[in-house]
Length: 308
Image 1 (tube, helix red, strand yellow):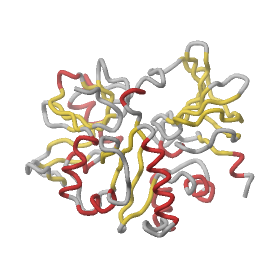
Image 2 (cartoon, rainbow, N blue to C red):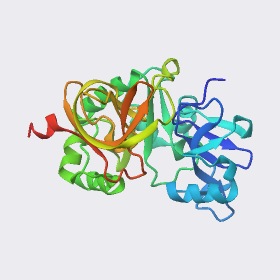
Image 3 (tube, rainbow, N blue to C red):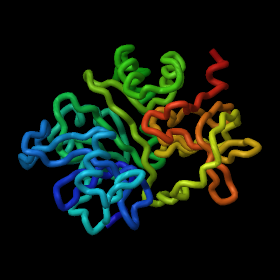
Image 4 (spheres, one colour):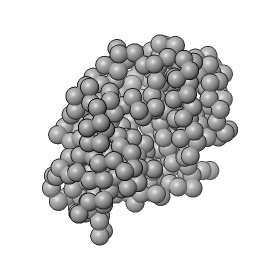
């Protein structure tokens, strides 16, 4: 079986379903509880079982009470407790077969088989009429999907995201930057859109040959800092965490653990970043997104802001 990777989902012996949030899953799978079986739950699976959906804070409270042995910075499920792995690239045929909107959206993209899928509630068969489409694309195919989305919007096949949808995304993210700066950065990312009134994401995930691109684990915390630096490599800037290699006197990489600041800057641009400095071997990394809403932390492209 292929390794469990970011944006897969796993189900444990009790029927609880978790979103995989890490790449380092050999010893225990790093994930976040999303759905737990409850007789009066608001979601119903394809088999008729009822589930309750848990948000980030609620999921930690539930794990603390019911499965404290899983509690860590994320939820850590032993592989021996997993009865099913849901892989987006393997389940996409079934998802598209039962969901006409997903089928119509995918018809506008030309991507190699096995390079894309849907994650989130659609992957688990727990979607409802209001569910977003969380489209996952792997490795280099993601950049092709990004280019295709830009063309599809430019030619009017897929509409431009409405102001109301941008405001909804901003209010959900609660970033430390203004709405205007947020939209300015987001509009050039081409990693989200609106289709038939439904929000969708293009989510990057590493391919199987590149799962070890960033050494896992937290480093020694040295304090907080705000830096300006030139981005030298942004090839993993849409990953989770987003990674920016930078030219700076002390910091070698800036990492973002919040989707808000993925794809925030291009190679060659000067960024301003505020976060927590960690020591990783001989390198120091600046970490953004040390809390769920990244309070007091941000990444902006000074080059982009000064160009308008």
